[in-house]
Image 1 (spheres, rainbow, N blue to C red):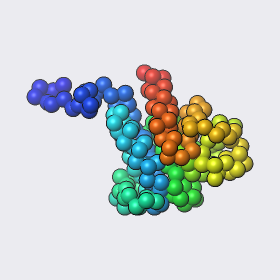
Image 2: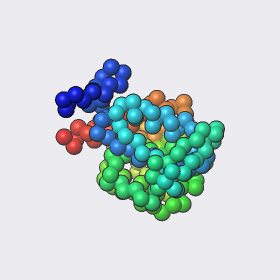
Image 3: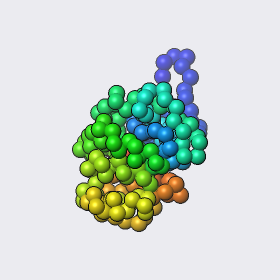
Image 4: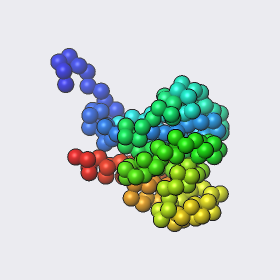
Length: 196
């Protein structure tokens, strides 16, 4: 540490010792996202030392969640590159039905999947992965409302709080968020260990 510099601490631990200090995660946001499914993982990841970048249709855009909680995007989806991140978060709500029509969103998700980086989808977030064509043969869960869509896309459905298949992590609903985050941490931790 440079002379005179103050150490940064989180929960009494130097930030340099947090488990995900060098991890960057991309999260998609647009209007009518599921509030908890975006904010809970974002805050848990930040607590573990990761950087979470919110990308929406426009940089600096203000997007309202299903329950009214606002999120201001850090960047525009069009400017994102999968190579700059260790994983992607696909929250649910009605947002995924809109973003699954954006070719750039689908291209990014395909790049994350092909690079064997974290692809984490909860609830209706799986719609984006379906449209990106990355779920064929992958064990997943999701909102029961999209079970048929997942199966028809070639995914192997499981009704579970979290399903981890290689670098894919999926959950069903907000109540599953603690398990969903533990799944994300496990995959990101494995990726970090493999990169050393």
